[in-house]
Amino acid sequence: MEESTSRAEESHDASNVINNSDINVAAALRAQYAIVTPQISRRRHKKPTREEVEEPLIDNTKVLPLHSKKTERLQKRQHRKIQKAANAPADLTLTDLPSETLTEVFRWLRVADVFRMSRTCHTMMDLMLHHEKVISKDIISRRYWTLYRCFPLPVSFQNVPEEFHSGLLSEKRQELLNIHRKSYHQHIQMIDPREVCTCMTCVFAWNNLCLLIDLHHWQHNLANREPIPMIPRGTHPEWNQELLMKNAEIVRLAMRRPLYYAAILEQHLSTITGTILRFSKWKKKGAKAQPRLYNMTDQDVDAGTDEFLESKGPPSYDFPYHRDNYYSLEAYLPNRKFGADGRWHYYALPPTQHERDLEWVRSTLVSAVPPEQRRAQAMANLKDHNVRWSQYLERAQQTQA
Image 1 (cartoon, rainbow, N blue to C red):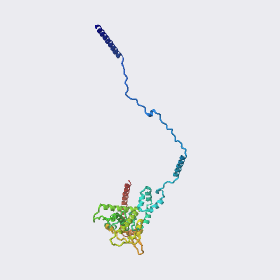
Image 2 (image 1 turned 120 degrees about the vertical axis):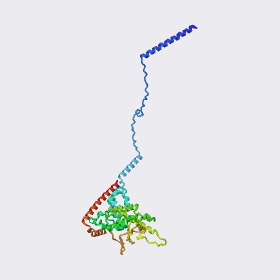
Image 3 (image 1 turned 45 degrees about the vertical axis):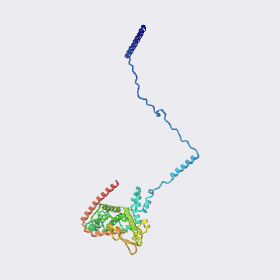
Image 4 (image 1 turned 180 degrees about the horizontal axis):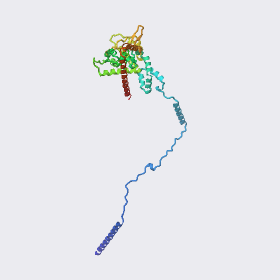
């Protein structure tokens, strides 16, 4: 038993010696050599894309030629359609017509329709502006010949010969016109002697045209039986001043643009027809039916002309000096009288009456003005004209901008 234990101890000691020797050898080897362990890269390799792997595709497909009776019929039909479209004339518009034809079309229209057509395109606007005098003259002669003779245009002060300027602007002449400034100041803008000729013919023409525009403005109140706002004596409300300035500006525009003058006549014809129809509807109970004024018919209203005004009717001698006169005013047609021969005679036709008034001014006022005062007034008129012209150009540039 003791022998076996001793042997086991010897074997254990021997194994320990061997192990110690191995450890010493390994330590010696570590001291002589350095063991390097390679580091594994964590970066992943990029996979190639599909475009890089695959070869580019080349489209070698071709249209297969179709050979059949049906395809040949379709091709022939398409070819005929293309040839027909190529040989067909282009679509013509109204602007492709000759200017003479378009001008003739304008002559048969109403003034409101002419303005509407001119706003469609620049071509129509240029055509209307270029032939405005001819178009307006033909429209007036066909539709408003009676109104044209009743309401002549005033003459611009620039178109009056210089030999009459000193007499028209003299203090004595302006004092004679005070009656027209004080009586109608509530519904008519006072005339400017440096813009409009102040002979009696032009003064009446200015007042009449301003009256027509103001009368047309209040037709809605008259048709609906709404009272016209009254202005106390000595007051000048802002709304009325703006209305008078607007009416006067329209008259000044009509003096430069004949088509606007025709528009004023057209509005007054509409005022007359509407008033006559309104008076014929509002009858008293038990009153007998009477014919309309100037024997106006529905066909006359639809025609849009003033030919029916040549019939017999009451003359217009009194000027409506106040808006209260609008209620009983049926048709205002001054400057004419009905003769014994059964026709209307007009006595304010330009330019004869205007020239007579200027001759009267020269004979009574110009000779009384000294030459030095005439020269000074002429220079002042020229300076004032230049200032007004520059202001007009500035306003035109502002409106265009």
